[in-house]
Length: 253
Image (tube, rainbow, N blue to C red):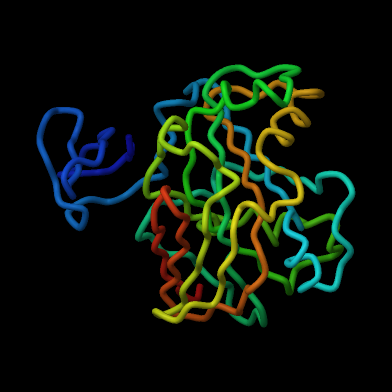
């Protein structure tokens, strides 16, 4: 099932996809273009704590090569703030004067129940579902490729996510999904989750070995090669097979 979270007629609703429309929690239906889309995650997370967002860098060998770096021998991870998240069909601000800001089409894993010291073979039991993330990076601000600083990866509006949270049961193999990105309708990136250096079960085992993962936590699993600079007015569509197509527009701040 595909889940969403939207604003319709001034109220926030959980919703599901049905016959090309949104079925709202109150039983009404709404067209996709009649709502404001929010990150499809709020029902899973406790309202009393911030969500933990773990993001992988250089988790595809071709992307590491594209950036002229050796592929990591263990996960290269940074933590993001929830304030960076925005929904489908929303706008991301590009800071005035920057030279290179690019998208990153990523499979995002949503944790479904408390995970501590999970074995690789049991990892899928702890996944609620999957969504699409576009984790923009502003390379002008990068101080060290292996330690992305806050201005690169934790900016407001710079991590669109959605439109759907797709149940884990509807994605039999998260390591066999095609990814693609278009900029103004032109295909600029193609890849597959099969090419991850560290796959989803490994990452859940790895993280839960030293920290507790909680319902609603996110793991952003990295992007393949093919990133290009995104400028004011560009419409970016990051799409993952079985998960959905996430639309985002760039504006200069």
